[in-house]
Image 1 (cartoon, rainbow, N blue to C red):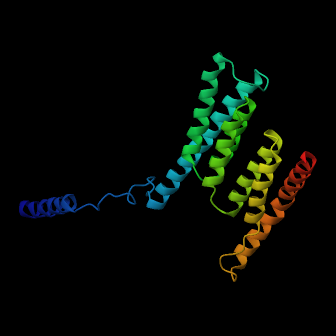
Image 2 (image 1 turned 120 degrees about the vertical axis):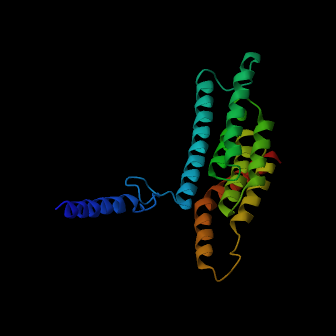
Length: 217
């Protein structure tokens, strides 16, 4: 009886030791319930989202600063005690432009910054910024838009129809661009849509500038 009991105890202890020494599976991201595996494409998407949010926030900050400034005054030259506030507006727009130098937000902020200079009577400064917009424009529509805005500025703000006609003529030439690949129907349709959107406005600037030049003679 005693020998049988010892045999049983030996079997039980051996089984317990075997279970205790059995290796456990490695614990990794997939083995832990509730922990999501982070993939490289997810990290790239998150980084892109953060970058876009930073651009939008910078644009909004600049727009709010300009709106607050213009709400308190009429258009006209800066007073000495306003220069610090205006410089801060310029820096805010420049920050937004630097975050998206050739993108949609950069183009928008250049136009808004040119408008801020125009509001305080700095037409030379506005012209420099609009010229910068032309020089950095990427893509057919961005270039047409920048040239059109420059022509409109020369016509309406600076009252210089000859310069307006020159810029509008350049915009019309950009509008007539043909596809790099004649067989590329997608590009052809895109360029046709740009022409349909901008042709009337450019034509109106050219017509008005030409009429004003005739009156000057």
